[in-house]
Image (cartoon, rainbow, N blue to C red):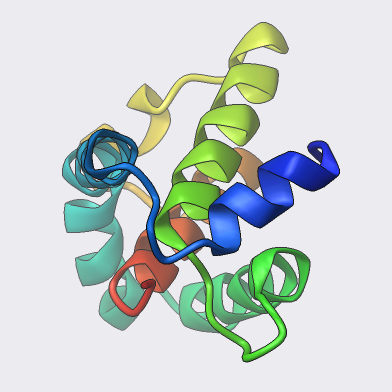
Length: 122
């Protein structure tokens, strides 16, 4: 993922306020693009909640520190990386912007899982 220094920075409670603010902004943008309709779809689309839970577990396992906490800085960077790689392959968040999550692609579901995790991230 990143260098050892990056891991130390992400776990340091003294992360620069600007870095934390940027992470909050990025996560807020994902919530605005996907999270609002996605959260509603979790209740309405059969199977979506289970799928998002599985994705969230994978992301949590990949990013959590020794105490099981997921840092917003890492979560935001992860989300941007997923979106960048998916966009390079032709993905667009527009597929679910109108709220149709019945046929959401892997990147959309993964980013919705990030939105769910962001609610409890530190």
